[in-house]
Length: 253
Image (cartoon, rainbow, N blue to C red; front, top):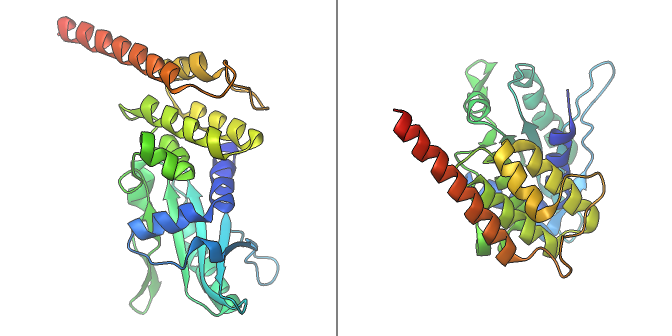
């Protein structure tokens, strides 16, 4: 069943196709420039009663409006064995509809899901279908300047690596970058998205700097934006707490 996390990431990819182009390149898939991209129809059903609905479809068209490539983006938070049957159908249906190459990209949110989704799908007669899978091992950690240059990817990175040791650094970099590029509604959505995946200590640190999660975007606590200096102070407090906790664990041993 789809939920807020799933839909928010799918929305992020649909709004910012350059992120998909970047991710595909990291997996060795070459796509046309992002400025040729447009959001396509995710309903890949052909006839009732079978319904096939992909998370996001991005179509790349040339100057004559001909489709030259397409990407099906699927967000996976957990294993779903039905995908072994629906993913090949998604790709085949869209390829027949658009008459162009189609790539199915899976955004796996955990290492376990990444390993599962990377397995080849047997189609019969020796034919296999293998989606392009991008999970924690392939989605980069973006800090500071890198986050500013690819802020939408930085948001995705902060979500995927939300339990990593540098999670708070990633979250702060992503949110500061998003503040300069995303509108008010998007900023609220992505803050809540990142916050929901973090542990309690990291959540508390984010709340000190950015405020608590709300359905509407909360303005930064100081006018003029989310200051980098204050973010660094939050990171310092977080690291000190973590160091003290690790020191106490060492003494307990």
